[in-house]
Image (tube, rainbow, N blue to C red; front, side, top):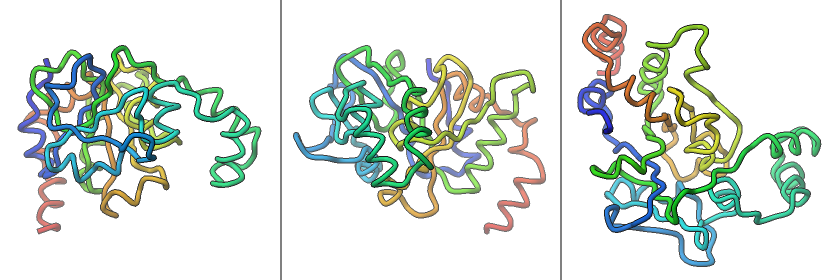
Length: 237
């Protein structure tokens, strides 16, 4: 079961819906659906406004939107390794050398879907068994609160509770996590190619299901009821 996030959302004063990424065998429970036009390139985050309207983005191995999503969400080779390196380094200027970019590409393990449909959109009750990650679309203040929450239960000896990896926006929703079974979070929506689809003061904070449970368990003893946040709210008002 997915924990009740009502109190967490209230404490964050979050107005955007929580976005789930599902790997599911059927699409009907996620309707209404939206998706890339077949054969046309489309960024996952180009559907942000559709999420706000309650629609769910539907991706398949035959219709994944862009080469990055095909590569990292479906393990579909849309370019040769050399072509990908040249594009990302020479055309986009994203790493200092072909060698460094090649090492980065070789280090990433693409996601391999268990079912035929990846669905990205508002959380859907009853589909918890297919839910892989949950994303908060947040402003800097809300991001600060979530980062503090991610650290709340973490020991120094634990894996880092928050990551901020280089990668495409869609990678940062799923593929960039080393282990979905660990309580971890990730600062996303930092890919320059997809920033155009979001408001300028918005980032993504994506969490695994174990981390989501930790955040939802924050109670009245936590920072949400302490002076720091009260002063922050007063300043913003």
